[in-house]
Image (cartoon, rainbow, N blue to C red; front, side, top):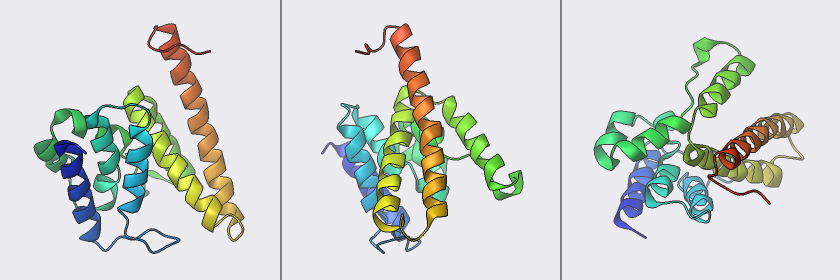
Length: 171
């Protein structure tokens, strides 16, 4: 593990522990989720800054840490990636549907690296829901399944755009 990734891991663990945040279904320390997201991102061959941002992806939304603190500790590149995947909606913006649409619109502007982080996050969250909540809460599962569909179509659009620009080759 590089110094940047080690520092991001320690920073993330401390930020979530400072508010006693745990995973909803298991009660595990919250750090298990960002570590799984970062591992998924790393498996795509992402550079260290993207893996670090994957570790930090929930810190601004869930803890008192600000984007400015992320920028100071980890640099502009990591902070920009975290900002791309941080929800912009607030409860006062409207109902859940309105807020989710705002957050999807924000994510649609993210780079391929930012969207990779968000998709890894969604994969891990969906795995947790299907393992621990699918039988108990059909509403949660249906909501997550619908959100997954939105992101899957965003990924298809991203892949098409990248292929058109020669950034990737789809077989």
